[in-house]
Length: 150
Image 1 (tube, rainbow, N blue to C red):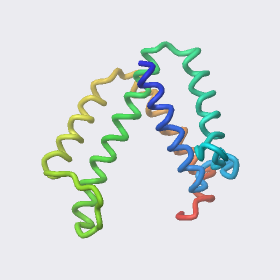
Image 2 (image 1 turned 135 degrees about the vertical axis):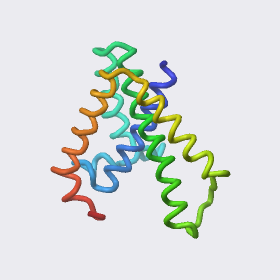
Image 3 (image 1 turned 30 degrees about the vertical axis):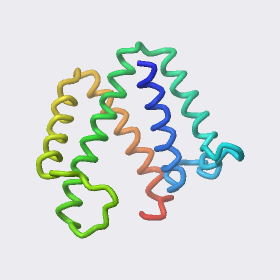
């Protein structure tokens, strides 16, 4: 479990960094600051680390595992679906990395992740839905207006 938490922490800091760089988070100027020596996003890493530490200190390990599982499985489902859709809509797009047998592996990955996701407890799925709604509210109130892509 500690290895999973560390890897999720590194992944989440990069997601927050990208969101801040795209102006989808407040205080994006400070969140996108890079460490002068290591060239890493140290501000967002510190904030994420403090948040994870706070959650880990009050929540049981099983709850943390369930929350990280729902997020990871949902992300994998969206990636599998996105690859399938892009392969169909834009078949000539340059791809430095190609997935072999996408019409077999894509649906298999999507179905496997969906099966695991829906096999989780109802409490876990409700928590995931609450976090998703909170994220959409933040995006609707802040990110949509600030996004350069709109």
